Every structure is written in structure tokens, then in C-alpha cells.
Length: 82
Image 1: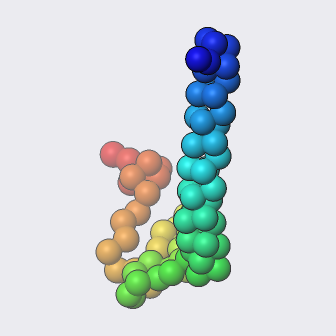
Image 2: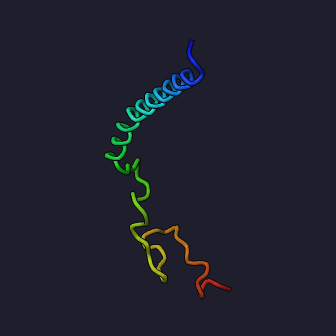
Image 3: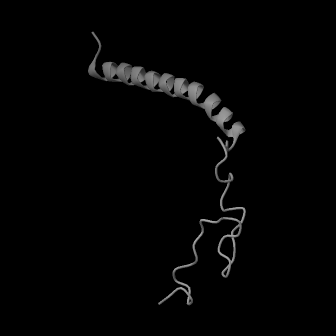
């Protein structure tokens, strides 16, 4: 028969081997997927806002959004306050 120490070591080695196998399988699945996604970069699906931060026409204080008819003036501007 196995003593308690030998049984504990056998179980610990089995669990360790199981953890190593699970980590190897997870890495084998995730690494190719992540590499593919990183290579693709940002993808723009359809004619929406430009990819990246900000806007093409940021405007300025007196003209808040040139070329965009739905833009509104700054509500906290001194002219807009009543």
C-alpha cells in the first residue's frame, strides 16, 4: 500500500500535469487567434466615423463643426447663455 505522503505526491503530480496540459491547450488555441487579430488591426465596417480617435473636422470655437449641418454651438458659450 501507498503511504499518505506517497499518495499526496502522486495526486499533486497528477494535478500539476493536468494544469500544464490545460495551459498548453489554451495557449495553442489563443496564440494563433490573437496573432491574426493583431495583424488585421482596426477594421471599419461600412461608411461610419473614421477609424481612430477624433473627427476629420474638429472645428473651432466660433465654427463648432464645419461641414456637419447637424452640429450645435457650445451651450456654455457666452453668446449662447441667456
